[in-house]
Image (cartoon, rainbow, N blue to C red; front, side):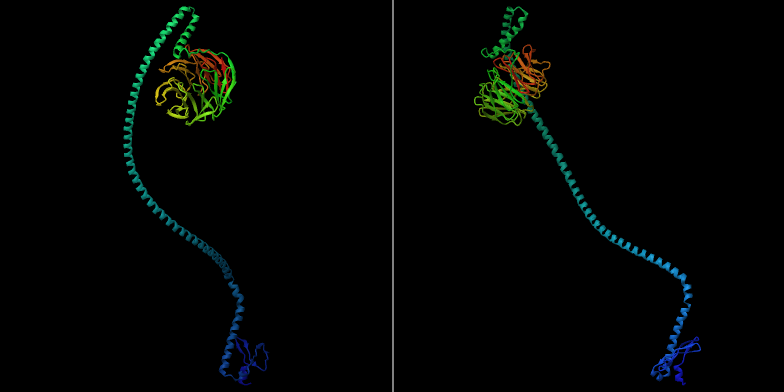
Length: 557
């Protein structure tokens, strides 16, 4: 076999192991000899025609491949030992790997926390910047306000100084004005007191002269009667006769009527529902006028107890009544703040007198003329009226409310009783206060002028009934009785036609009758079951009428 053919079948051995063998392409035979494997490859047809260098390079390449394969086999043979030696490092590596994973997980969590904190930090930084800007604005505003406050304080200080100066000047002016006013008032009071003093002295001297003449006449009559009547039991009759003479002289013999002391109830009338607060006899008549809580005024025949007329039109409770001296008109004071005037013949309301702003509690008509009337209300006023035309002609304002009033005999002056307990005399035309006296310790509830006009009877909440001389306002007598208590602020007492007796109702329903001269109780009448509010004596001398809180009216003879 030549050299070329030998190379084709050459086996290259490295470290005693066969790597490969060549064989011809046309044989394709694998042989085994001497337990050595020969690998025969088919050689391309053109292989025979390569150069020796190419064949050498090809053989080297195959040898390198065989070396690599051997190295791989050796590595496979030593793999168990390498694995055995590397087990400790593998287990440590797994622990380190687990720790690394844990640390990586913690690192991721830290990154997340850091991201959240970064976001919060960004938000807080933004908020901080916003708050800082607001603080700067507030500080600027505070600075402006402080400067404004400083300016305002300065202005206030300046105005305070000016105000103090003005106040001092005003106080000085007020003091001077007050001193001047007081001086003028004191001067006027002194002049007025001097004039009043002079007038009172003149009146007192005149009155003393008249009293002396009357006393002389009375003493003469008394001496004649005492000579005729020796028995001591006739002495009281002599005093009554003397008093009657004096009263006849004051009132005129043709007008004098002697009153009798009532002892029994002749008629008891159910006059008004809700109460009867005011009663009044017509002049020189036994017809009785009553006014009550049922807003009506009624006229009664006291002889028969029959109702004669009923007057409607009043819008409130009737608190007081007055009748003109010709008995043609009746005026009622009402709680509706008005006065109502009726024509008795027609029964129609002639005038509604308005002007008061509170309840009207007292009314009276002039004893000289049927044209003039006067009223008092709880609005601190007393008003004079022209009742023919139906309007107010004068208003007197005072600090104390008036509960009762009446005209004096001259028709120009009036007496008024007030809740402060004082009795006052007024000039109705000028509205001036002429005189004043402390009549009672509590409110005055009633005023009644005697027929002669020289005596005025006052009743008060102190349960006293005082008699005053209208010319000097001196107390002529004080009447009181155990158990006799004034029932209301408008309880009306009365004096008899001959000025000898006084009648007053009580809260216990009784009526006390006093003798004016002896100032003791003559009798006590009992028929009412409710507090007696009003009493009235007929100008004919009898009967006596009384009204109570239940609306009953009793006629006494």
